Image 1 (cartoon, helix red, strand yellow):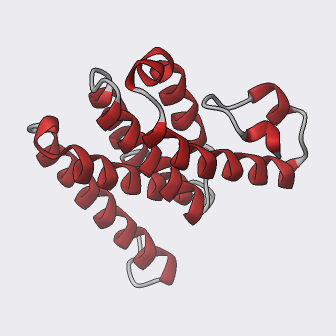
Image 2 (cartoon, rainbow, N blue to C red):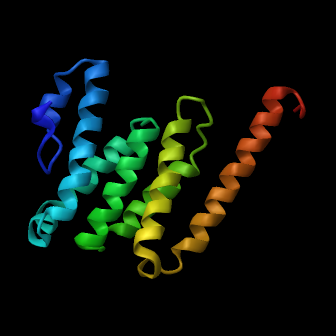
Length: 161
């Protein structure tokens, strides 16, 4: 797992691993990144920021479990607070898109939860920099929660269509 110890995610090694090894490799890299980002100088982060954001978003959309989604969110927040915030609104838009997705299958739920956690960390860490997008994001989360409640009631048979 020492191959997971670099600033960028080693996709070549990752693609050669089995299912369970992939999850372990990704989690190990996320833990390493959590320690590495605060200690890395700003110039190195800015140089690799676009690729890092792309890799973290890719992991975000791969149905991560609770530890992985928290690490992804923390790392994105630290990445934007240490590096440039120029693409943070694209990340917020991507998270809002994931939350509003029409896919209500149980297999997609971890991705929606990861997007919510990510937004929480971004707003907590960056606050005012994110401006008016907070109102839209809260509206999207409330809409998604309402849809989830309705779907749960339909599933339980409380509401019939």
